[in-house]
Length: 120
Image 1 (tube, one colour):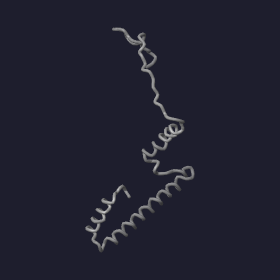
Image 2: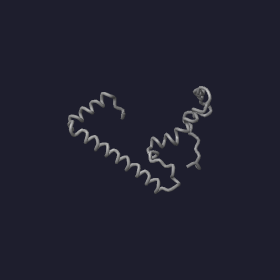
Image 3: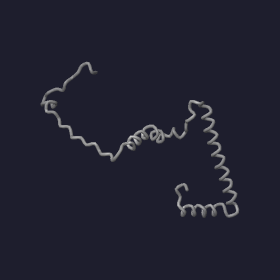
Image 4: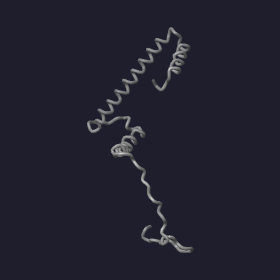
């Protein structure tokens, strides 16, 4: 639950008992629950209003897609993962021999490289 272990959760309960006291703790917990419920309802209503305002063209729009990580994962990395998952057998790394320079391409001392006056 929220990345908390039992020890951290028990420590939070003890701190809440010390801060609110045993008499006011149930009231504080119910108020926190109501506030969380209201925030969720407001977020849902805002999402529905946004979808209704955008129209039917954006019926599959998800505001979470605006997060850069989600956008990259959805539009770029899914294609790569599909390519990797659809290949049969083990993937082997591609090995290429290192390119050896052609002695004709090397310039001698004092030689100028070719210049194309129309390239710039």
